[in-house]
Structure formats: structure tokens, C-alpha cells
Image (cartoon, rainbow, N blue to C red):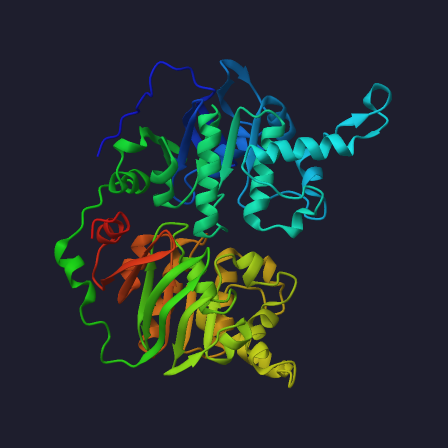
Length: 513
């Protein structure tokens, strides 16, 4: 498919980026990217993980300085040298994780750094009455009536995001950037946010909306800009770019469903092997919509979906990191209440998390200590695993998984990403889990390490372990999986059998199946 850039008419953009490039060392994050935002529109910025969306936003907001290109606001060339500079220019950002001060009041957060003053030359004292009055007026524009003297922490995430938007309005922003604003909201809160954004759009604001949820793009946005591998694919009216065409733009090729594959989605799936886990109507508000899932022993089940589809959220619910609020979970024919990771480990589950540095390893501890962690957690604080047993276990998995380290006492933080990932895998293998959940186990590691880890996954399944495999690289998912569960917008939309190609998965994501 060939994409052509579309023009919304003769109007002058509020904000226009032309030929923007940004490089980090030898990695080119952005290359000749253009972006146009117009008054009175919501504009979606789309692309897969690594497409350059975050880098582009940081250039827009002054976090990064572009190496090349021009940025114009209201027709005048600008260069934001900091986030404060961007705000002064009229560019405001609301992030996925609200970056305000939970211990301060709502009013203080809205005017932080710009408190209204009273007294001689306006420098005597903070004018609290005026600040609270103006805060209420700003929130009223968002149809929000709350006590602005209460701390921000006393309100829900949805309200906190409204406060962040109100802060943007308080600086007379011409451009509002929302980076994954709905990721922590339930359906009702999302609809409320939609209403606010439509109202701001109708008042003439230019809004850049970054999301991974396809349905939200079509429910809210007027135009779409797609990035891929740091380059501009195109700019399109949302009404003229269907789901399938959007996904094709993001991944770089047409997605055509094979009817035989789709029709066979309910075919025999490891029926000869015992059921290990069943989820019925399992859900968590704002994270996972009600779904059914069955996992068999000796089976690799892939979770197919774009970033933000709910794959990691489902893994967290299954492992007890987040508790479900609907449905039931059955393991080995017995209903269970998965209320903590400790319970998951006791029941024979293991999880290699998506963010190995933040959630997988303890960088200051040795390779030996990191590998022993999960087994010790399952046994409890006592008895401690002996030093000799830890050494034996660590040396076994270093050899078996090919972990490259000077010795098992080296801090794991000194290892390469691929070797850290292998050590985390070894940690869970030491517990001999019946189900191993792998969330992006090959992200950020070299090709050889990827192949070694994927080979190990297949060996584990052959030995009877159930594996739930999550990867943004769809080719990995289809190559490894006996069956693929496809997710979109936090919901399961179908299943595909082993032997399916990635075209069929993308087609189901796009709603063709």
C-alpha cells in the first residue's frame, strides 16, 4: 500500500514541525519527520514501540533538542530549550503517569511555580483566595466541581488527569499533548475524558493524542500521523484510514486475513494434554475486559496484540500483581483467588516481567542471589537456602542457559541485557513452575541471545511446562506458539491456531476476522 500525505485545507497550522531529526550515538531516533497540528482538532500520533513517538514528544516539549529541522508555532520559528520554555510558548503536556505533586492541594498543583501574589508589587504573599477561585474556574471549563483545597492524592487518577489538563489551560496553552492519557482509566472515566477533549477541541485548541488503543483513535480523533522506525509514514484524515490500513501503515505491509486460518481458530488445541489453567470472565476495571482463557500443559500460547492491547495487564492479573475484580480463575481443577505474587508462586506460576531492570533484577545483588530469589520466596523466610545450594543452582543455570558472566558472584547489573534476561529465566526455572509467563523475554537483546531463549522455551514446553508468551515482535509469537490469543483494546477478540502467519494476527487485530 502506498500512502500519501493529506492536507486538511488552507488553514495555517498552530504548530508545524518540518524535517525533524534526532540521533543518539549511532541510533537515529527520528529522521525527517513532519507534523502539523491545527486549531480545533484532535490529532492522533500512532506507531509501534520504537517508532519515535516518545522522542518526537520530547522534542516538542523541550526535553530534547532536534539535531535538524524546524518547529513553528503560529507561523513563527521557535526552539523550546526546556519543558518550562515549552510551557511559556504555549505547549502543555499531560503524561500517562500524572507528574504533579500528590501532597499539594489541587489549586497548588494547577498554579505550582506561578502562584498569584498580593501586596506591594505583587511580591508580598500568595493570594490563596484568588488561586482557589481561579482553580475552580479552570476546572469548571472541564465540567469538574471538586474541593480545590483538598490534596491531589485524595482524588482518583481520572480526576488527577483533569487537574493536569487544567494546569495546561492555566498557562494559556495553544497546544495540548496527551501521552497515553487513558491507560489507567476505566470505560466511564475514558468517556468523561472524551467529553472534555471534544469541548476543548470545539473551543479551538490543538490536541495531540498519543495512544495504542485503536478504538479510541476512531472515537475521538480527526486526523492521524503514523511513524515507523523513526520516519514519517503519512498523515491522514481518520475517516479515510480504516483499522486495517492503519495497522498496515504501522507495521509496514498489508494485512490480509486467510479465511481458512480464521475459520480454524476453534480447531483442536492440544486436546490430548491436560488443562492447567482456566480463566472465565476474568477482568480488572481499566486493565482487562472480561475474557476466557484456557492453558494446557506442554503448550506455548502466544498473546498477540499491539502495544497497549492489554497483554501485560492480563499477565499481571494472572500472576497476582493486580487483582481481578470479576470472573474466576481455576488452576488444576480448583478455583483460586490470585491475590498476590506469593500465592502465584505457591501455585506453580512464574513471571519474567516486561521491564527486567525495574521489576526483574536487583542490580546490586549477585547473579547467584538473583537466581535464588524466587525459590527462597516460595519457601518463605525460613529455612534459608544454603550457600552451597545457591552456588549449585546458579552454576547449573549459568551453564544450561549460557549466561555470560565472569563468575556467579558478579553483580547482575554488570551483565548485558540478554544475560540478565537469561538469569531471570533461570530464577523461575529453579522453582520448576507448571506455568511460566514470559512478557517480552527477548526485548532489547541480540539475535543470538533471542534464539537461545526461544529454543529454551520450546524445550520447556516439550517437557510439559505451559508457557504464556508475550512479544511485540509478531514473527516471534507465530513462530513459537501452538495457539495465539489475539487482544485489542484490553479485550480478547479471538484465537488462531498454530501455523498461522502474522498477517492473520494483524487482520484479526484490525477486526477483519
